[in-house]
Amino acid sequence: MHRPHFSETPDDITDAAAHWCMRLHELDCTDAERDQFAQWLAADPMHAIEYEAMLEIWDVADQLPRPPVSQAPPTVIPMPAQPPRRSWASYGVAAAISLLAIPAAGFIGWNMGWLPSSYQSYESTGQIRQFVLADGSRVQLNLGTELTYADYKDQRRVTLKKGEAFFEVTHSTEHPFVVKAAEGQVRVTGTKFNVWMYQDQVRVTLMEGSVIVTTGRANEGYRLDPGMQASYKAGDYEPQIKQTYSNDSTLAWRNGKLVIDNLALVDALPLINRYLENPVRLADATTGKLRLGGIYNTSAIKDMVTSLPKVLPVTLSKSKDGNPVINPKPTVNLNL
Image 1 (cartoon, rainbow, N blue to C red):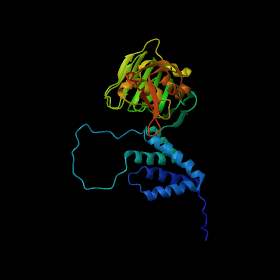
Image 2: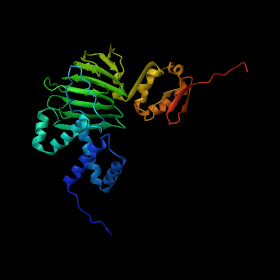
Image 3: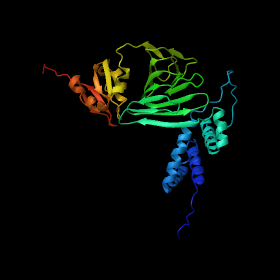
Image 4: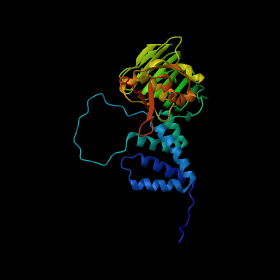
């Protein structure tokens, strides 16, 4: 017997996508539910399209302000075991979905600073790309870069998901521009600066204007003036700040170049791995002390890695998971 087919309205698909987006992010989501979701996703191409849209809203909800934390130490009261509760993000995305579905409520959400008036995603894979954001600011993306832009009432917010970007920010004292990168952020009103990120490492270089760099654990930010650079990684209480020089090669990527200035391999690999799908690893600490220099095309970094045995006393192998490994070149015993 054939089961009768009931057509879905657009609202039905939106409601289902919202349900699955929230349910799959719950800690108590079961395998059976995940199987049901897979069946729903495969039933109609529109399901996947609407679900992707809901994930975009979830990404916005992840940027909603956290509830304020009391300064007084909390009183710990033993409680009986309960099922996992929804995180604030779950409630945030539920509110975001509801507010965006109703224009008047959406305006209230924007007016309260909870939701952006615009939200865009940008990425650059095989070539350097440049975009004009909704506020008129310009951003240039290096290879393999992804970021999102959200325009809130009180600030313009960029989240750098991976890669490197050069920003030329339209000035607005009342509407600051904030770039979130790993466990820190850069806050500006109007300036030109570069943000490089690899895993949890971030480096901010200022060209014009001023910025305030704040790490994840800091209570206050650090101001940079033109020609200054701040670096931080996960767990840092404050960034490391230094002065750059006229021959600084930070922006060489804008011309498709990677400049490595006589760096130890252990320091050069984050710059190299930023361009590789399978990051290069070191066999041991001694190999990491070998120094490398040169100017390389960012579109051919994989070829550069392959040629390392021609310029350094090393050999290349592959790990079990397929990543290249730099090994010290075996020494020849002439006494044999």
